[in-house]
Length: 605
Image (cartoon, rainbow, N blue to C red; front, top):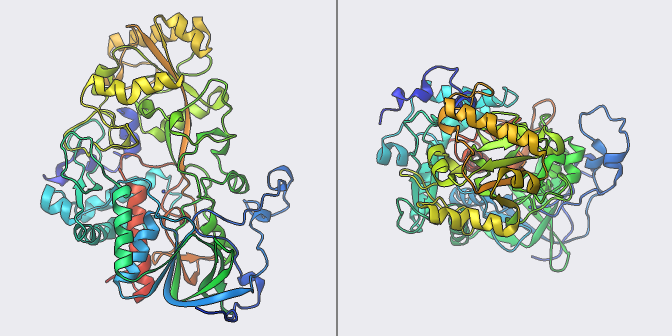
């Protein structure tokens, strides 16, 4: 397969965003020197239990700070001095999600002694696709490779998606090092009987023009049309096995509370609290501390303090539990800067609403509140019954368009031809609902998987939606409008206009691709209220190309590394969906590089 001929790489203007809209996470001892200066103290935790400042003044009082965020929320608690025991290691890793797993094993694999801190009893499994360029799997098994020129086009495409409010050097770092990281990843998985799959569906079509970069692990024999068991639920327990084999000291069910810095500001360790008896343990880190606690998507107060743009439009927050901004606060208290960009995040347009639901608060986090088919480009109307945008394009565009509407949500409308429709749409990556060759076709949630038949689609999507009461079914459009609580006359006019555009094969109103102009004309009819499902935040601590946290002047904080959603600089404003697995790809690559630099002083082996 000759990648250089792919239409995706023809011209710098063919960005993913542009193409999309056109067609588409021993012993008691005295504490070591912590510098005595409280400015060099940090009090926070590992993945999920921060000392959250819950003072309501964060959102209700006017701050006199000159910073763009509310500094009062990030005030440092007093230093911890009642240390019960001390442990000495080379590297401390905080968090046991995708980034923490890879950092811990990488550091141990490089010969370092490692303490691995996690507030819960187990590794965290969330998300499963990993984007990497020029891996051996891609080149040797699928014939997929990219030249330097092609990689640079991809880098610039990702930066354009972020309006260049990100750090292009970091994106380029991923493009140049993700392949070798993936090669190490594949070898480590293979040692435990786990295989790697590369997604090539839609690689050479005009539907999405997405590069083939999406890797996913599986243990059992891969089933071409699925469903398959794949992703971090397989990979992360394997990383835990490797960590145990390598003698990593696990401090699970321990909460990270405070970074230790010497008089120069260098991070020399961390203080953690054992959850069972609340005693403090000081872990000295000769080579560095790596923070990987998962961002702050589970912390509305931190969102308010950081002026998070999408806070009040969130409907579902599945995936936010335990992600309270702990690592970010630890780093900021140590002097690190945070991305000024405070919007966006990785979100899905698949959060199902009860019609009396108020978006923003309280957040829902249940599986019943998910309508996985929400990314299908069916007709969308607002609460006034009006069509308001092109329904094509990646899910982030659809969310941003939808939350600008009255009440911050929208309705998805379709008819009894739903099976024919979803086959025509041929959505991809995590939005896929129809099984396809060259796709991973994995079970994404319990009972939710890309389907091979109409009956499977009804079993996986339609029937659960109807049973939850969120998906409405009606024999007439008039009755559907009544059930949805939208103006009947306007709604009928909207559907009539939409059907006429479909008949003409041209969307003169919003420019939707002709193949996705599927009419709404055959009963029974269906409608569901949808909103913003937040997966993770991605503005975080600023880092350099060695994965070190930096201060406002861009100077590295020695001994402190930040990866995953705790780190910033890579994304901004929105998430480039059509690079499947880019968020975890960035996390995986940079987690490995952080460990390399902490142990060896270089990101190169």
